Length: 255
Image (cartoon, rainbow, N blue to C red; front, side):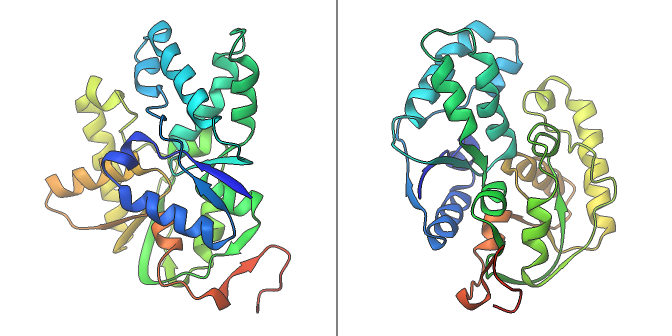
């Protein structure tokens, strides 16, 4: 199975370790990965800021880049950015040159944990993490991709990982891309609430499937002189892996 890696800006610039972990997990499950070099930003920040016409060139570039490779799927490490790629189907539906390509791209694009769980059928990635953790579910992952199951199921099968429910898990962390810039006071109140909820779990690790949320929350922890270890779900599923523990959906639990 051939997979094109959609890295996202924030992983490229801030969390290259997340991209590496994602690739290593995918290749462990038999995927042949490639990285289209011409990919850039998905265009979400400028589009959401009202620059709809100007962002068309970004959309076109991303479609050309990610569809340049002959792959079965496109996989990215951020629910928010993947949701934007899927939205291309609607945003470019009247574009005579790009409508069909954008629709084809959207249909084969998945967020990392969603791809593992729903396409590859992974139930146990073979990972082990000796920690107490809580999971922050990002807004775009749950509300736009409508993915509420895959991350939880994959984390539930990580050996020695104790997951503690996060109070008010449905609440936004306050980042929202440009929202945190345009409404900094509201954003700070939102992330403070999120930090307080995380602290209430007494978890030592915060896990998420969206690097931008992790960046925002970790930044607030730092400014408050509070400590928490942040991990993207790809890093968790790539931690201390024992192939003997790997299980797919059609295999019994003791394999």
